[in-house]
Image (cartoon, rainbow, N blue to C red; front, side, top):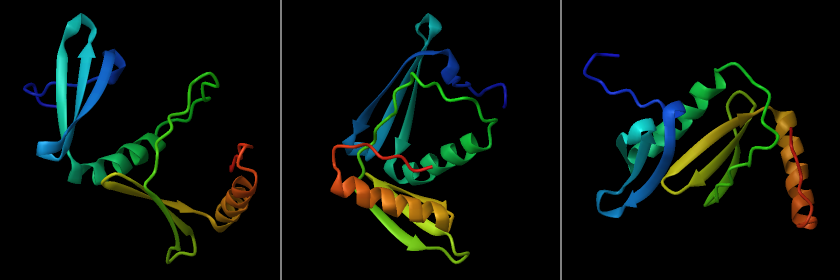
Length: 132
């Protein structure tokens, strides 16, 4: 990182909020650090498509830690789900949220479990189902 860059370290954040900028077709994140220093990041809608998978892929490469069982699961409403086959025989699960679609690659066995879980969830709408 060069000396002129300002680093945004979310571990130092005391507040992170976001808002829509419809005129700019963008989202804006505001990070407040200890001491009240605020940094603003504007992300055009077209860049969300690349940013979301990048963050997930980078996070996947980090060492695995035990999940905090008390942490709340972040629920993100989806606009659509699509399933298809990838050239290597894996299953593609594409999840669309707003302007971004993220494609997940799953082994066939995981896709089979997902299919069964979705069928069960559709017939027993009140019981939560887990696929691992």
